[in-house]
View 1 (cartoon, rainbow over the protein chains, first blue to last red):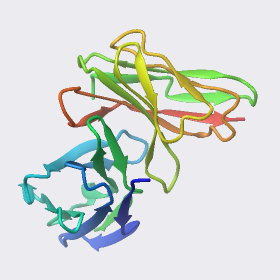
View 2 (view 1 turned 90 degrees about the vertical axis):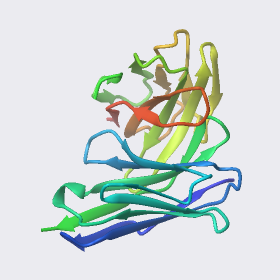
View 3 (view 1 turned 180 degrees about the vertical axis):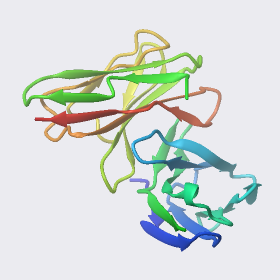
Length: 111
Length: 113
């Protein structure tokens, strides 16, 4: 079946450094790619998303890039802060209503 | 954090019992979803509903059942047929007009004793 691979599973960075999380999807029909942040014991919340007609999108310290040919998309967080510590999930759309989620990346920002 | 609510926050079940998890939304969304989250794994889709009185199985529907009698509500029943039900359950809703953001509820943590 279709799947989304996410790497790395854990990532530790020093405060102020950049963090990059990568995802690969298999469904060539996927056209919407959201990223969610989940703090411990809380609900996932959308932090940024990108559609297939765009190669890059940026929102302050967060950016997402998409390579449709290679079926890769990545989350970039610059100038990381301790409050960025959380689990991040990528997802790819499947059909009109569904997502397939990656397995998550636990990001730790060390002060 | 309003808009979509789940209850209870914590639920304990004895083996052999059915339990029902509540999910309510006031976002006027047509689509609603149930996911299961286990440690170290992503969110896996149990059931989803695009419209009232209609729902489809997701990837791990065995041992679960749902109903969608009202637009605002999408309860999930974890039956005794679900062999390993201890997990964090997340409900979500989304607009039916094309693929868009899904909004998540706060979750229910179910533990089987």
